[in-house]
Image 1 (tube, rainbow, N blue to C red):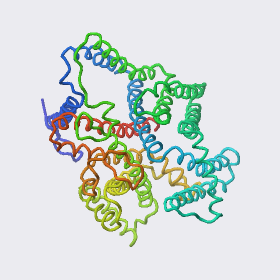
Image 2 (tube, rainbow, N blue to C red):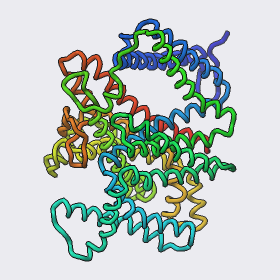
Image 3 (spheres, rainbow, N blue to C red):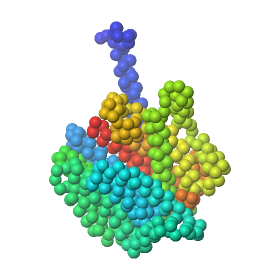
Image 4 (tube, helix red, strand yellow):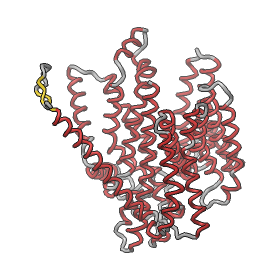
Length: 556
């Protein structure tokens, strides 16, 4: 059998043996990476979940009740692409919804507070949304409404920020300013009367339910949207007695969980419940939950020795401690979410803005073109700079030069923003370049201005790529430790931050410090549990990026 074939297309000798060898080498490299990662995760999970305390019968029970049914279900749907796609989608929505719910609880409940949120949201967003609604649904030719809405968004934010600053320093302004901010003061008093659950119900849950109703109704022909809205409100109220019995969970936090987790999950289920194969995919989480419940029931009945996990509710809701049994990640989780929310704001605004300017506005020739190419080269180089260098930059710039407090939320957010800003710019540029130039030229041919082309054509087409790159970059930022050490992030904090200038710790920093504690309980129990928590957050962020990319590919 010949293995070498001469060709006339410029490729020279084509060797079949070399092709087969290359194929198997790449397969071996992939398997090596997957197996190595699986061994690492298994080792960490074994300690985090305390599996050494479980009896062999425990493994047999869960093998029969959880692993076997799950594997059988996946094998059954392997020949149904719609079901497999739905399984991937619903898992991404579950993980992403968990992350969104956590962010809502941290930002609205812990950092901002219900009264401040109620006053600021209605004082700023109320008039803005009213003007935008008038321009969209009443008079679509009222250009003044959109301009006024944008102006009030900035003016209202400025007035409330200035008012808060004056309250902090104990001064008062003259009566004209008091008249402008008087509605906000009345809203603060109203928020006190409503209470935290009432505030979140009116300003968060009701708008989210209405949006979910309209979103589902616009994509279906039946009344699934109304059914979803009624079900969400019913679950929000019906689960209150159960929520009252849970430690560290308030009614206000539960409503935010309904908005961040149950609302997107319910919308996804409602949109996919009409197809039989997709309904089969939606059943996958139920199969897993049923297996867990059945295994737990059988183990309790048989009296089999169970694992003694370090990764539990106590770890997620307790502050740091010097003893392994009492150690928790609660301040570090809140700090990490607080930091990453600010990092997301900074990088989206400056990173995407810089990418749009470099791709759509910056000149490509002449002296300005040379400057643009110089900037592009430096951005590419900065993307490969080690993270410890950005820690030194944050130390020199934000602490030594500007004089911000060491180890505060704002310093950590700004330093990590500098770290991932080049990555966000590059990924956003690639997404913008992927938009076909014919679409731009067609829009120009119809008389559109450059801003109209960017707003209505380029950005909507590039948005999935921009979101994917940004989320993956944020995943890198939330796992960094070296920059946090250099800017003075504390390794032992027993309280959650309540402002951007508060001292803070983060999950990577807390895990790093635990690794050097002399007690073996930290190294072999608390540290692996902290690693699992951090990996869960990273997995949730990456799953959102994958879901956005896959949804975009299906839509195109």
